[in-house]
Image (cartoon, rainbow, N blue to C red; front, side, top):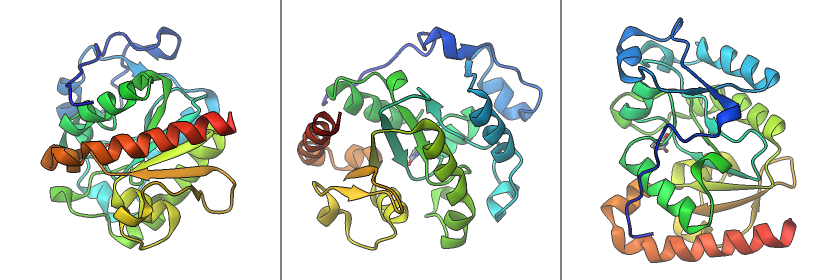
Length: 227
Ligand code: URA
């Protein structure tokens, strides 16, 4: 987990990717994503992605480059949920592609998972300007998109990374330090949710990696029990 791992972006699962169609992607983002494969989703998720891509339910549509729907295996057992796109994600249209994303990939590898095996999404589909925290009204506006993603993907377990993801997903204001290691349930379901620190926090506080590894081991044990 302490080792940086870079995954070749071209080695994504071949039956779910194709060359980028750039028709509705802004010019700035096009230059960032040239020749980059994008994921082709099954019909219902593809339709949802289209709906999200033109969403104007909150003010974030005014400042985004593009929406960041989520990426990965649409039949994944593991759903990883972060906070919101940052600058890199807003440019590339994919969650967790910056430095925090590299560390997230390492966390997944430590769990024996390739990034392409899981599905990765955020509480918000649009970047909050200056990486500020999401506003409550933005979380509410975006909530149904994540719920629909969960209904389609049907993961066996959710891993929420970071305080914002954990608190907004579970509708609690418990400090994240107290949530770690506990089994929660996604509201109105029996879907288990485990919580750990955000990889961006680990970049600032690398000593906390030990705690994250403890959390991941508990999550993996739970996954084995429910599988
Ligand atoms: N941080 C997040 O929570 N999500 C991303 O997609 C990128 C950084």
